[in-house]
Length: 320
Image 1: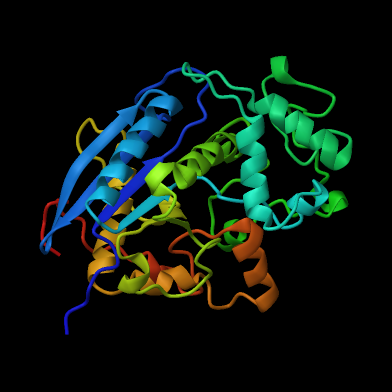
Image 2: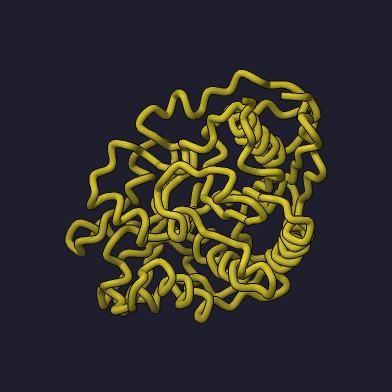
């Protein structure tokens, strides 16, 4: 019997924490692909200038897919959680991931022109956690504060909070979620991105159809019965697969195309479902950390070279 893919559509997003509207390199890009029989069609590769614009576009796309009963894999390139123990240090209730999402959604103020208060939020969290400039670090000098410094504080070990999540430590490349400025400042993307995910997760008719992997699914292989008519939000790392930009194409645009095509091809071949189990070498305690607070990166496993093999550098409309 031929394999039945888990998903009908693939929506991949490269996020940005820019403080003003931006297009091109280092701004928000999304790629939307959908199955048409055995073919995979690229419906959109879009560049959004602001997070407000991106949020509304994502809401529209996901609501349309939900209304049509399609199963959607929606991937975002920022972490969905923080190293284990943060929620406890903040005295947040269980489940830790959800309490952290609610806290950030309440504290973050992100305006229509992309201006936001992420450095002030980080400083306030540092004050609650350590009484000083840790664990978050990195900011422009104008945003420096007694509880947020421009440079690395080197205090994670003393605080008892890991510098990297378990998933980030499994592969090369991901930056610490505490890092808010300078190249690879994924921490600012997490602060601005999680409130958008919470908005989408809880919005209207999307709420009943949306799951957060692995927080609401657990780490386990998925079947079509799990995804039927559902939207699954997952953390991705586009650099897991090679990206070959077309002439004049922004690399970020190429990367969201490449990772969407990668997961779609794996899905068609039956290779995507096992990846939702994460790394089989995780201990029971580590699995609890991942499922309750830290989250995982789709495609990172104990045999990551197999998960990320990419032998189909062809046009997205090609039949797989």
